[in-house]
Length: 102
Image (cartoon, rainbow, N blue to C red; front, side, top):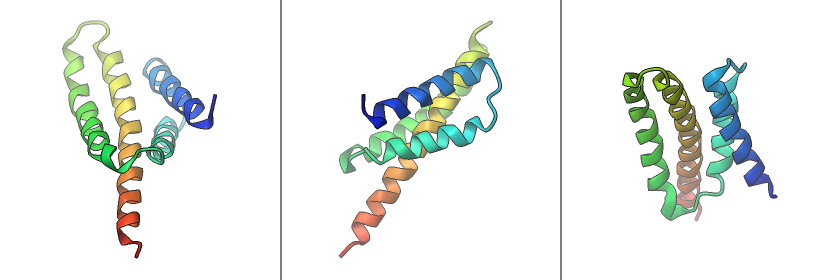
C-alpha cells in the first residue's frame, strides 16, 4: 500500500467519523489530505476535480431534508467536498506553475 492510498483512507475515515463526532482541526486535516491528493491529479483531470469539489459542497445542503440521516449525509458530503476542494486547489496551482515554466 503506497502513501497516496494511506492518505486517501485517512481522509475518508476523518470525513465519515467527523460526521458523528467532533474531531479537532478536522477541516485542516481534510484540506491537507486534499492538497496531497491533488498532487497526483494529472492535467486533464483538473476540470473534473474542480467540478467534483463544487458539486459535493453544493449538493450537501440538500441532504438535510432526509429525516434522521440527512444531517450525517450533509456532514459527510461537506467533508468530502473539503477534500475535493483541497485537491482541486493543488492541481490548479500545479497547472499554473507548469504553465509558467519556460
